[in-house]
Length: 285
Image 1 (cartoon, one colour):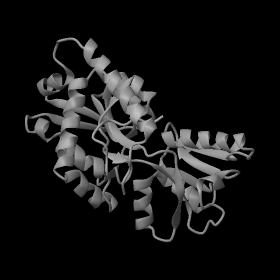
Image 2: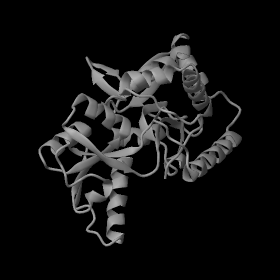
Image 3: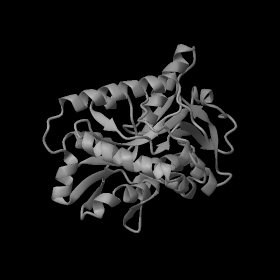
Image 4: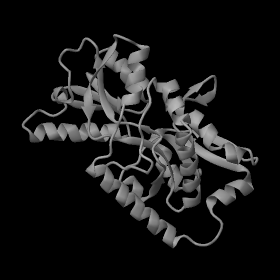
């Protein structure tokens, strides 16, 4: 599946590069976070491990697509004796905790938005996360996003998916429609959302296309895709804006894996298909 960068994405990239240059200009000449990590022999990483197949807990261990990438990205550091301390935290608290310096970085399926980029820096994409709509396979009333007008949908709290559903509801109203009847917010993630689709409590839900591809492969005939919402979007990891040395390290390692074909191999392993990703950070509105 190929995704191209449109005019909006190119503008977002320009904004990201401009902000990164400013961040580099004001940085002092002292040792950066990466040097501190090497001296402390520990890096603290925040993850929300409830988003299979990107990251989830199995046998008491965080596994998944991003877990495999993280192990390879951190190899240069672990070879130097750096310990990885990975925390499994609620998604809604991740960015606030990063800003408060409770950990060094975030490695999870995170959208880099223009608003978030005012406070944080994002790596090159690790996967595309374009939003799709999922509903029951036997739901003939919903075949495309426009069919959500007058329906009930569910989305996780503090996510871009929730924002997209709110925006879509307003679009329906502007066009003379009813809007989405109810947008239920979930704190526990997609397991409960899928269960509520099954039992009819909600009609549909948004999620990333890679996740939905895996869902329908694992449970054939149970769900169906009812189109895509918005422009192509990408997942990335995040650091604080001032920690450019750590950001540069992450980017170089991710791009090295991409060039070697390792990212494509991991995508095939976890999603069943490969993704064409930009070599630069890509933001969404």
